[in-house]
Image (cartoon, rainbow, N blue to C red; front, side):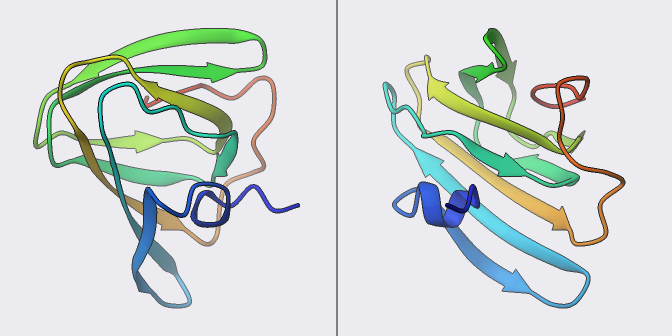
Length: 112
């Protein structure tokens, strides 16, 4: 089974642009939503709203709080997420199709 977030969480992830080099995804959820486990290749993440999330990967969890308008590097990873705040989450991901390597246990969880 694919761990592509568009397939694992189709009500929250959608493709807004794709070519040979990148795929651009839009993500949206509401407070209390939990995503199913999925993969992200090396990406740039742009926050359209401020939010608080709990990311789960490899038996550990990490809470992140980000402001609207942030742009940051997201190394390749496998995780599930949970909206633990009181606002909706709106994010754009620019996925690189030529990643630096596969997600693995030594890779970071969440934005770098």
